[in-house]
Length: 553
Image (cartoon, rainbow, N blue to C red; front, side, top):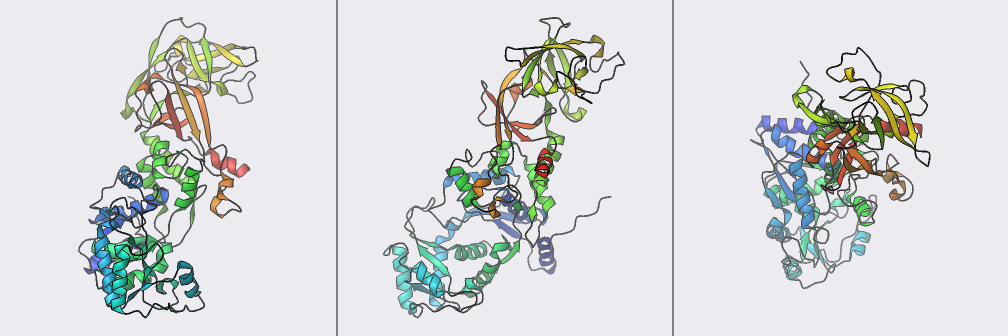
């Protein structure tokens, strides 16, 4: 009997709140800003927030933090919804901070009336100068003493569009000597004459994140507002605003964000990779975006398993990319269909097999009999991997070489009798003879060979382009290395094989399906594939070859 998994610290808080009767049910939220595509770090937050709702019989809202119109697009909104659903989660309500613009404005008016907010004319540079330092108190703005009536009029004029961007801001009136810099009269609203993807031109003032976040949580009656550790200094302001507005007391809790080796998690840096052409888009299979990982062939199950294994902690740490690949292999080993694909083909001719004859052989579809079988055509001319042949066999070489015998997967044992070369001295044909009594499943020969190789029939094979992906960066933590992080991009992160050959069953391949090309790795069909030109992406190798390579370097 397996041990019950211990609770993480957020689950302990939730269980205590439910046991005490503080809440009858919990409500969490996932609040992405639609200014880019979600990445694997967001997947951790998605699994945590939606997982809590599922585990404790609560619900989770999907709320878009769309308060910065110049950086947000409908494309990003759509991609975020697709990613959350693909990961296997459903939200209780699809909401937007912009749904609350009027209510947030009224909250700001309430603070002005309570003499807890004022309109400031200072520039961003002047505000920063007067704010002081962590060891030196700030100084009051000369506009801090404006009357309630004056502030109400100026704020209304800001909304009416009477001022230009940056000409005025609304600030909370708290304490310019507070030890927490975020409490030194923080900005609540700024002027931004920009078209919003949902509200159009109805607004020219927009709430700052710190003002929209907690109040949106409160409006929705969010019980547990879960953020990453960088928001710890913001919690005091979160609580202050809720208290002063006397609204539903949502509570903020912080956990360690996901940091992973050989990648970057900053949206700004990911955007650079896209706009500067280092990758082919947000869904490039080398990107740590959920859409990129999905295109590469990652499964939702493997990502959820990964998020479960790394857990929820209060301290930052670096997770090895190999753990994510381990979770992926673990899932694909159980779920991927087995097929044969030859990436670097060379002809193998069985000289004693009837020319023009086709035999339909039975091959397993998966790791066990539950997956069933499929028919694979066999003929006297096959494609095999070039690196399965050596002109002179090395010690402990158990594949093709003159005089050596191997088993062709699901077929026969063959003996290599010789080979020919083209004008450039490249082997172009391998000549073998087969032993009819060694047919797989019907072998009466009593022979035993140490090597088994895969193959496809030349006559029946389908041409395919295969894209082999490696990690995008050579450095373990490119963001902390000297110089520009882009200097550490792995120039060998993509290798394109234009003339691979795959078995005919893959004519029915779908983008959703996952395949193990026997002995070569796990693959999936790419969105650029066509019936005339199939394209397969390597999702991950069968074994962790990268760690061995990195350790030798």
